[in-house]
Amino acid sequence: MLAPDVQAHLCLILVQTLYGAGSLVRRIALQHTNPIAYTVWRVLLAGPSLAIQQHIQGGLPLPERNEIGLIAVTSVCLLSTYLGMTVGTILSGPMVAAVWQPMTLVFTSTFSIFIFQTEDASARKVLGVACGLVGSFMLVLRDFRAGVVDSSAESGTISGHAALFVNTASAAYLTVRRRQLLTKGVCGGSATRLTAWVHLSAAPIVLVIAWLLGLSAEFQESACGGGCSFYQPPLNSVALGAIAFDAMV
Image (cartoon, rainbow, N blue to C red; front, side, top):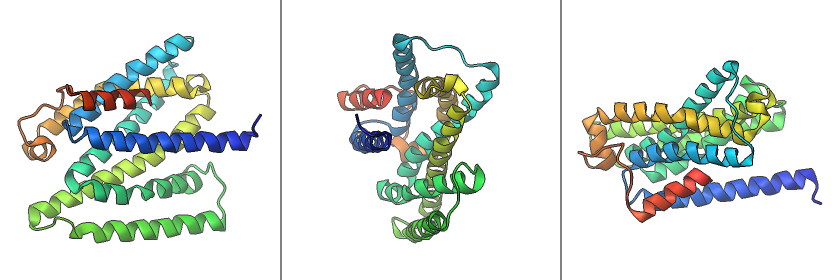
C-alpha cells in the first residue's frame, strides 16, 4: 500500500496528464467547429453525464437551501474559466493564451495565502508568488507585438488579455473555493457530487451568456466568420468525440 502523500502526488500527476490531453483534444476539435458552441455543449453535456454517474454510484441528493447560492457562485467561476479561455484564444490567439496560464498558479497562491488564508505564509511562498507575478506580467505585457496593426486590432488584443485574466483568476478562485466548500461539508463533502451540481447549475447560465455574446456581430465575425449560431451543436465526429472526452473527464 502506497503512502498517502505518494497517492496524492500520483493523483495530481494523473489530473495534470488528463488536463494536458484535454488541451490537445480541444485544440484539434476547435479547428472543426464553432468554439463558443463547443463550450456551450461541453457544459450542457457534462452536467447530465455527471448526474448519471452519481445516480449509478448511489444517487444525487438535492443540495441544502443554504448551499444553492454557494453552488451558483461556483458555477459562474466555472463558466468564467471555460469562456475566458475560449474568448481570449479567439481574440488574442493560442500563443497568448498559453503565456497567460502560469498566472493561474500565481493567483491560486495569492488567494490561498493572502485572501482566504487557507495556507500559511512563508518567505519562500511569498518569494515564489512575487517571481511568478514578475515573470508572467513581463510575458503578458510584452505580447502586444502580435498582430497589432491598427486601433481595432489593438482593442481586440486588449479584450483578449482581459478575457484571459478572467480565465486564470477564475480557475484559481475555483480551485481554492471548491476546497473550502468541501471542507464545510457542502454536498455532503463529496467532490463528485459538488462537481455534478456545479455543472448542472452552469447549464442555464451558459445559455444566457451565449445569447449575449451572439448579440455582437463583431464578436460573431471573430469567433466563426459571422452568421453562425452559438447554440448549434457540433455535428462532425472530431468535435463530438472531444466534447464526450471533456464531459467525462
